[in-house]
Length: 631
Image 1 (cartoon, rainbow, N blue to C red):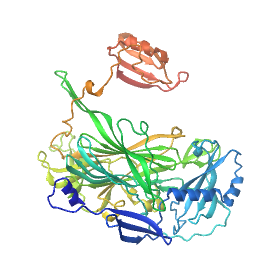
Image 2 (cartoon, one colour; image 1 turned 180 degrees about the vertical axis):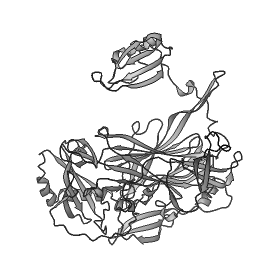
Image 3 (cartoon, helix red, strand yellow; image 1 turned 135 degrees about the vertical axis):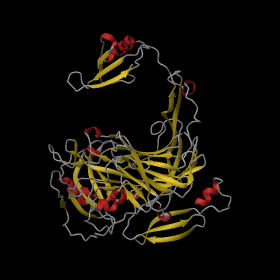
Image 4 (cartoon, rainbow, N blue to C red; image 1 turned 90 degrees about the vertical axis):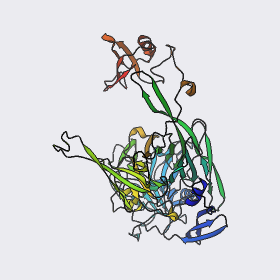
C-alpha cells in the first residue's frame, strides 16, 4: 500500500499494481462466529478464522428480535403487573450488551434489557425520565434467563424473580474484546486549500493518506474504540459497560445528517453502506458531511508606530459524522487548518441513561436529576489511533520534558532558568501525562532535517487532559479496556488488526459528574486532540492566506442607534444604567427596555471603562459577576 501511494503522488517511478481490494466479513456458520477475509477482485475467500469466545455486535435486526421476545414474554408481563403502572403507560425496552462483570463466562451472547415507561403516545417523548424497577437477562435463543428488580437504595444486591438463582461457572482469564464489525464504504478524496486527504468510513470516520502540499503526514487517523464504564457498584449496574464501536458498531448508529441543522454552509454529503443479516447492502444517505467554517483570526499584527494592522482570518475544513448509541449522541469532527494543524473533536450530547431511586433519597454513585430518577456516574473513554507518516514512514516518538535548574551562583543566579530534556521511545510502551514537567509527545522523522533549525521534522501530539479509568486495575472494566491504562500508547503496526493496534494511540476521556443542568437533554461536552507541526516548515505555512477585508467577508456595520448593539439576543436579565462621575459607566442588569438609552448615552464612538454587574434574578440578592471591558 505504501509503495502504491508513493507512486500515486509521484514519489516513486517503479511501476506497481494497486493492492487488491479486500473486505473483512463476520458471519455465523453452524453457530460458530467466523471472520472471513474476502478478495473483492478475485471474488475469493483468502482466509477464515473461527473467533472462539467472541460474539457479533448487536445489529438492528437482532435488537428488534430481542425487544419483541422480551415484551411478549409471559414472565415479563407477569412481573410488570407488580409495578402498578398507569393504564396509559407504554413499556420501553433498551438493549445493552452484557458488560463483563465476572458472573458469566460469556460463552453465549447475552443481552441486558433495561425497562422504562413512556406516558405520552408521542414516540419522541423522554422515557429516560421514568426508569422502571425491572431488568431482564435474555439469551441468544430469545429465552429469558433471569428477571431482576433493581436496587433503589444503598443495598448493592438486586432481587431475582421468576427463576431460581443458578451458580454460574465463569472464566477469570484475561478477556480481549475484539469482535468488531466494520461495514465498508468506498473512499473519496477531499482536497482543501492545502491538505490532501482520502477518507474511508467503515464503522467510524477514518482518514487515509493525509498530506499537506503532497508531503505525507499520516497514513491513517481513526477512532479505534470508545468505552463508557458506569461507576455504580450495585448489582447489575456494572453490566453497563458499553463499547460503542466494538460491540455496537458506529456504522449501525450513524445519523442521516440534515442540511442547515447538523451542518451549515456549503455542504458536501457522503453516503455509507451496511449489510443486513442476510448480506444485503443497505445505503445510509448523508452519514458524513464536508464543509468549511470560520475560525476567527488566523494571525494578526499591528505596527504600534504606524497603527497599521494586517489581519488574516482562519478557515477550517471540517469532516463530520454523528452517531446515536441508544441514549447518547456523539459528534465526531476532523478540523484541517490553513496552518497545517489537525484537530480531532468529539462532542457528547443526548439523554442520560437513568436508574430508579427511592423518592427523597440520594446516592453517592450518581446525581438525582428528577424525582425518582438517578443518573449514575460514568466515564467516556476514547481511543484515537494515529498512524504517522511524517515526511515518510521512518518515524519515532520523541518525549520532551521541562525541568527547572537549581539555584546556582554562576549557572542560575536569579533562579529563573529551566532546560528541556528529550528521549526517543525505544519500544512498545504506555506513557502518562506529567503536568509538573509538561511532558510533550512529538512524532519525528530523523532522516528529514529542517534546514533552519537543523532538527528533525515532526508533529506534536496535544492530548486532552483529564482523569484516566477510575475502575480498579483488577476489574473486568480494566481488563477489557487496556488502552485506558495510559494516556498515550506506542505500538507496532499490525495490518491484520487495523482497529486494535497502531503506531500511536491517544487514550483520553471526558469524565462525567452530572448536574441537573444536564437533564433532560445534555448540552454538548467537548474533547479535542490536536496534531501540530513542529519543525516541519521553515516559516508559518499560513502566510499565503489573503488579507481579510470586509469586501470579501460581507460583514455589516450596525449604525442605527435604535438597534440594540450591546445585547444582540433576547435575555431574561434586565438592565439598569447610570453614568458615574468622571465618565465611568456602571450598569446593573435590571430593565431590558433601557438598552437603547444605554446606547444613546454612550454614543456610537465613545469608549469608557465599564463595570458590569449581573444578577440572575433582580428580586434576590445573588452574587454579582463583574466584567471590565471597553464599550
